[in-house]
View 1 (cartoon, each protein chain N blue to C red):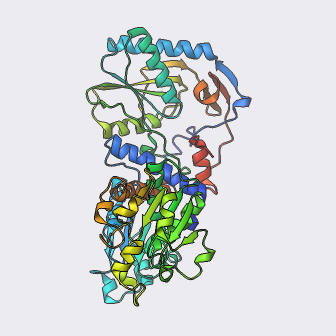
View 2 (tube, helix red, strand yellow):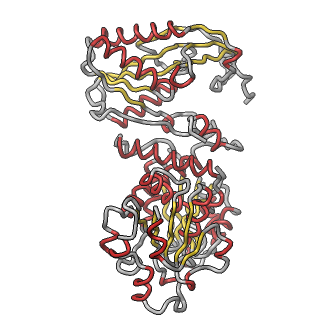
View 3 (cartoon, rainbow over the protein chains, first blue to last red):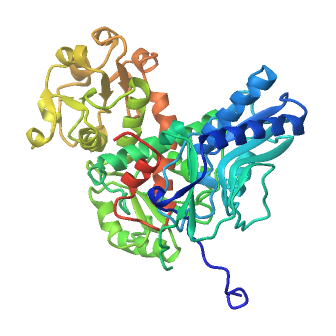
Amino acid sequence: MSAAHPEVPRRRPVTGDPDAARPVLEAPDVSRALTRIAHEILERNRGAADIVLLGIPTRGVYLAQRIAAKVAEVEGREIPVGSLDVTMYRDDLRTRPIRALEETDVPNDGIDGRVVVLVDDVLFSGRTIRAALDALNGLGRPAAVQLAVLVDRGHRELPIRADYVGKNIPTSLREAVHVLLAEHDGRDGVLLGPADVEDPR
Amino acid sequence: MKRHLLSASDLTRDDALLILDTAERLAETTEAAQVKKLPTLRGRTVVNLFYEDSTRTRTSFELAAKRLSADVINFSAKGSSVSKGESLKDTAWTLEAMGADAVVIRHHASGAPHRLAGWIKGSVINAGDGTHEHPTQALLDAYTMRKRTGRLEDLRVTIVGDVIHSRVARSNVLLLGTLGAQVTVVAPPTLLPVGIETWPVEVSYDLDSVLPKSDVVMMLRVQRERMGAAYFPSTREYSRRYGLDRDRVRLLKDDAIVMHPGPMNRGVEIAAEVADSPRSTIVDQVTNGVSVRMAILYLMLGSDVIPHDAARSARAAAGAPE
């Protein structure tokens, strides 16, 4: 098997030093991208009636809250926002150091029959989204599930794609994408920099 | 986190807080979001090895493991080869051969979990050994205190009763010390262990003087089954001096809580109406026990990678305060 696909490297989650990275999106670009995503969500679903936004911690939750605020500006109504921690559903738990869990907070009316829009910062292998789809299974049966991401950096390992993308950024596996959000990092922006040297397993 | 959980003293402050935080998250998903089953430990095997009777702890561990999709094998001394005289070591090898990833052990002999940990590859979790320790009970008690009072640092906890026989008291004193609470132990002198002066606690023989300044009162069961000789003149006298009845509860602060690890002797160490009052956390303790044990199983069995300071780095990554 591996001899047939020698070009596919075994990947570790990519981390790197933000100080060595260069900006690809500045704060106004992030804001414009989220505004566009908010409009696209409304257009695609013909309004905000059945929409529930679920952010994936940590930064996906802040992004979901921002998109919800922009939807509220346009539509003049609040839409439910929550957070969905997918840690317990990940397929790489055994091979990585133990992770602390983050908040799961599902809006009171639940997700049955609603259109759930999952929100995350970076779409990469697609494995986080697979875990999120499994986690949704336990919560109920949405009418539809859609995906919004601020950055799609490619390198999918599963047949998953985003419905709403802030910015497609072609990357190599030697690069790391850093999404910065004011709520968590003090400022907004997306940086692209070198990845840490992978451990040679 | 260490590989085994044998004593509450195995846990650093970061370890203990990681367990409590994880339990809180799990409670959110299983209670608030109504998710009853998580796939996290699919394919792992947890063995409940119980040499002593238990209702709450064994079912709590069983439920916790099943909610994480682990396979559970219940092994009790009655009805197994143990009653035919099999030694702990031979039993351990049997479990090892069956591929147990974790063994939850309760044993009447203090130190049995330590011995077991030396014989098997999987994790050993002490679910109560003799009069020694019961660390998971201490963790669920700390979780309950934090949930009800909002803090552990400088919390004034009073532990009352049969301290000498109580593994719950011993584990609580160790863990609460690690977490920064201030513990006072109240009991008749005969029910305090030798060397109590070396414990990080205050000692008192007068319950009425301690109650007004307590945030938490933990009543211990009078363990008659471990008492060979007479430790106090009569049950009535014990109850009058050290039991928590309606009149004594009036001495407590308005927001103080009353805890009991169960099983209770109603009318001995705690009056029925106190046990059933809104101050009482006894039912909460049982519910919380499942979340806390899920957290322990997840943190001990979830990953094959055990870096040196996993608890600290996991909490830091989640943005938890120091």
